[in-house]
Amino acid sequence: MTIIWITDVNDKCVTPNGEVAKCTPYAQCDVIRNAVSKNAEGSKQFARKSQCGRIGRAVLVCCGSLAKEARIEPPPPCTTPNGEAASCIKSSLCNIISDAVQTRNEDALQFAKNSECGYNNETQETLVCCGSEAYPLRTNLLPNRSICGEQTGEIRIHGGTETKIWEFPWMALLKYKHNKTNEDAGYQCGGTIINSRYILTAAHCVHLKQPLYVDEVRLGEWKISSPEDCEEGKVRYCADPVVDLKIEEKIVHPDYDFRKSKNDIALLRLDRNIEFTNFIQPICLPVSEAPDPSTGSKLTVVGWGITENDTKSDVKLKVNVPVVSKEQCSSKLHNIGDVDSTRICAGGEKGKDACQGDSGGPLMQSTSEDPNAKSVRWYQEGIVSTGSNCGQKNYPAVYTRVANYIAWITENLKEF
Image 1 (tube, one colour):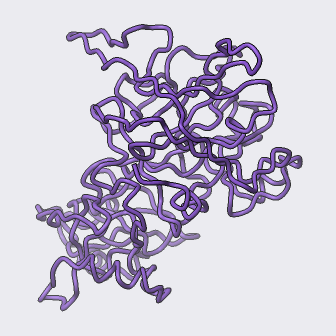
Image 2 (tube, rainbow, N blue to C red):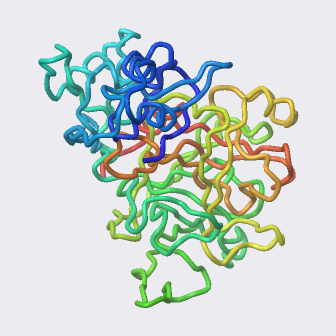
């Protein structure tokens, strides 16, 4: 089993035996250190396989209950209070809940209590259902984790930029018309399905400085020019027909600042409910207490944006971009002011970026690297907002940070 490389002490890890544990300095992991000092058979090889990071010159190891390879039964599955499929493990191993409990926040304490799933008599420790969150969803107008953020097919993004036909079924295309003539102006922005009635997008895609207006939303699209989306292979695999829906209401954040691209977020209420299929699904939104994505971590952008040849793509594309510190971002993008907690910066690698056609689309993170995850689930961390010199090295793009606006989103959702 491959160990995920961790950088911080006490981060969650998985041992070569598949046991969920904590990344610990070698000198403090008695079970491995003692086995190596006694020259126990296979202990040195196990120690090498257990390495999960380094702090200065100190090696970190994934410190479980054994120092030799053996079959360990995986922790039992469970469902978190938010409906996420997860694993029932010792509370001391569930950093996300442990850290939240230490804040003494009432919602976090109640979530931890509701997450209890057993008791370990040997260690006299409570077991908790440990997923990716430690705070509750606070509205029934957003889907819980048993519904959102899942897609059919393979669970990981591999190399390449072109998506598979089934990937990212929450993507929406916004179609525009000219104000004076009502003539078709094509697809200019993206968005995401967040429930059965609403699309999340950027304010600049709705509050336009051009003589255009957003007229309808297309769902279930993959290849724009094709009347039927199919992938050829041993078996021909075709998607359901696309769905075009009119817009009932446009809701732009009241403090949207076009010049600085601040509060660049909007909602579109559709004129009827969406029927979910394998090719049309909602994405998960984070809870408002979700931490910022860590600097250097890879997030995913999807859309039909400008390619390296300055032409819009006919097929839905994907690209992985690294998170950039707010300090570095502010120093590069002077025109947008300081990058604060309402925004995320990512990108800055040559040829990899979110460009004009991807405005309003998602910046996403998946649970595929979480050792407790029972399925891969996608969360929307950001909304493509602004940038400079698309795809230019050292110039990241700026995204509206969704977690910061969860209260605003839920306040503006109406029953459907």
